[in-house]
Image 1 (tube, rainbow, N blue to C red):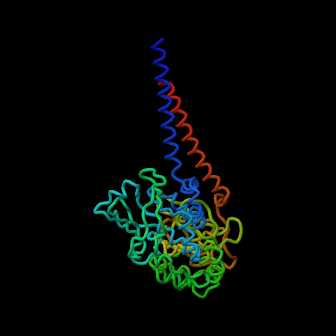
Image 2 (cartoon, rainbow, N blue to C red):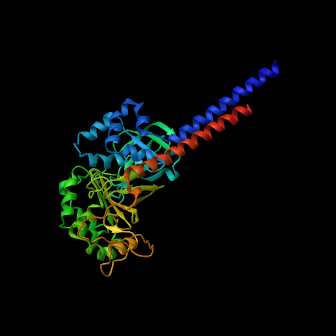
Image 3 (cartoon, helix red, strand yellow):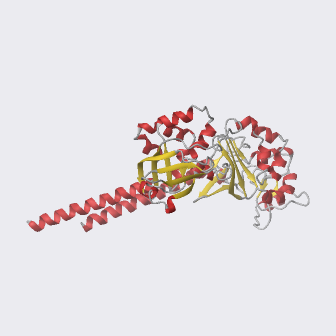
Length: 417
């Protein structure tokens, strides 16, 4: 009887351990969600709201190691009383997101009593000099002070730890908004921005000069108020491509330039989380001038049917505008045929069809300069729905595989018990 009781107890204990392990695995798989964390604390509701509308919440959730310095509603009201634009508020709140883990214990064990922490504001590339850093100093008497590096003072204090998941996310409360002249500086409104000047100053002069004064530039500006994302080929990538660009028709040149823009604002975090086919400013109907966004870890790529370009840097990321540098010009299949060299002379139709099926990886893509307009899709896998189905099917197989693994694990554990 005692042996049976002991066996039952052991089995129950084993099941408890198994259940705890599964819960831990589920938590790890889901990651952290700053919106849900702060939703449990009404005193941070305003701070939480502005993390959402500035899209900072999504960027926080995408990071594996992060510290959020939250402020209560009263402190947020002080910030809102300045009547700053949303883009400026985003800069200020970005300064409250540290790109390292600082739990309550670590704050009181800082080496040499002080640390300079990089912030999400600094990571955008918009922060001049050292203004994107926060000074954290362990003061005498157990107090910890915070201050923006460009402000030159420590005007906020650590209040309490709100939530810690070592060493994933730490949410702490500080006493007030960090004062930063650079973060609070007015940013130009969309209508005041000169897109070509911005690109020229950041290594995309050839592309900017090509865009300047064209119908495509006007389309870019018309879309700016509602949201715009530009992928700008670097000078090294674009200057060698100018010859191919000049061979396009006038309509083709406009489509090519518009192909490097999206009619919505996409932060880098949004691009990483929203992989798949996306329309461009050149899109004029189903399956026309789309690109496929993919990411491998931190690297984001833009895939056409002809080539693949990598995002190499951020020029500006201020809603409603994002401009990124890429290492290749994007070649739309509607304008360029993969693997074909320019034909020296017109050829019979049958011969032309035969040569169009050849694909030499060593030959550069040739422009389609025919007067008949963009060439149609050449293969059935051009269909947007087909590609989305392939992507969804891959995800379903992955999820099913995970589920099978969990079921097998449970069965084995039960057998052992």
